Every structure is written in C-alpha cells, then in structure tokens.
Length: 323
Image (cartoon, rainbow, N blue to C red; front, side, top):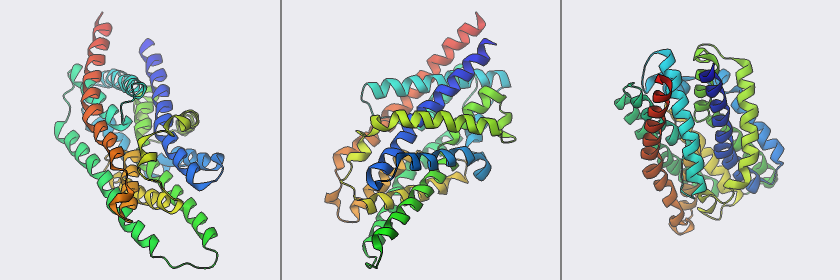
C-alpha cells in the first residue's frame, strides 16, 4: 500500500515537472513571438499531449519501461519509484543551482542507476543507441532550421503576407505539439503506467490516465512559463517570428523522425538546435554562441549525475524495503 501511494505521488510530481520544464519552455517561446493568447497555445499543447497515445501509440514509452532494463514486475515498480523520484529531485536541485539540465537525460540516467542498484542490469547497448540518437536530434534540428530559414527568406512577398505568416505560425506550433506528444511526452505515460496500472496502460490506452496526465501537465506548464523565460534558448539569438516558426518546424522534423524508432529525444534541445540553424541561415554572427554551452553542459552534468542519483535512490529504497 505504501509503495503504491509513493508511486502515484511520484508519478504526479514527475508529470508536473515535465509540464514546468518542457511545457513551460514551449509555451514561453510561442507566446513571446506569436502574440497570441496563452490560453490558445496551452490548449493546443495539452490537447496534443492528451491524445498522444491514441494518435502515435506508445513505442517511446515502452523504451522506458522495458527496453532499457528488465526485471520482475514488483522490482520494475520499485526501480521506477527510485528513478522517477531521483530525476524529479535532481532536476529541481540543478535548476535551483542554475545548472542547465534536461529532464529526458535525467530520467534515462536515474532509471539506469536505480535498475543497477536493484540488480537489474541495464541494456547498455540499447541505452547507448538511445543516447547517440539523442545527441543527433539537436544537430538534425540545426540542419533543418538552416534549410527552412533559407527557404523562408527567399519566399516572395505576396498580398496578405501577415495573415499568411500568422497562419503558418499556428501550423508550426501545432506540428511541434504533435511531435512532443509523439516522443518526449511519452516519458510521462511510462511513469504513470507503472505507478497507476502496473504497466497495463501500455497494452491498451487508458482514457482516464490520458486526461489526468494532460491536466497535471497543463498546471506545470502554467507554473513553469515564467521560470524558463530566462532560459538559454531564449537568448540564443534575437529571434523574429519567422525564425521561431522555422525553428518549430525544424524541431518537429527532428523529433518526429525518431518517434517511430521508439527513441526518446529532448524537444527543448531540438528547438535550441533549430534556433541556431535558423540564425545561421542569416550568418553565423546572428547566433550568440556563448549561450549554446548550457546545452553541452546539460549532457556533461545531467546524465552522470542522474545515474549516480538513481543508484543512490535505488540503494536507499532497497534498504528500506528489506528492513
């Protein structure tokens, strides 16, 4: 009973942090450049997250629950309790200390560490492949952003261009919401599946769970919007609306391209890559390169710190369970 309650509380906290970390970043960029109602873009993002399992399946979620390490059902729940809880605390701690972080990297590292503490040997080859593809996603976003930026700049001016641009901006943000729901958001459904349904959510979509995830995510996004307004992605370049639109399309292409492989990648880092590529389409001097270092720091710090934090949390939980 205590384990079940702890799992449920941890899962809800994890979804809330996802909303604050990921949703806040996506909303802030959209509202700042688009000039549209925050309610409209929030509704689009939350709707995409809620419908994600029905539209795209749960291939990425299965990577978290079974493809990075295997063990008995009860052990899997305890590993997720230690890993998800450690990732939440780690992201909060690093954010409070001003250290750049990535929730996707944190949860991957923490789950691997917690599994090892419980004697569940991580599938190192699979984990290495996931991380390798995760590294390439921002680079794909960068290349796509450069190509889209070049194409947009060469578009001839036509009558009604402002209205056309506003429409394209909404389409770009919509595609970004769908890409996030297809890939990065599924880490939430993986944690909720193990906590509330013993992993049966991955076998058949659970509508009540979808609604719960969407609502908690929305609350976190509202809380996180102002906090991420000072993030590094915003300072990468003095972006104009067409550049934000190009970056959104580029990041959507990068993230969607990995969803079918069942590989989780970071949407926020892909967006940053898209912004860099879009800025480079006007010349490398447009990009404030000093603000790309936090992206590198997130990889150098978050992943190893997550592994250590998950391992320690797993050992503590294992000791408590045996006692």
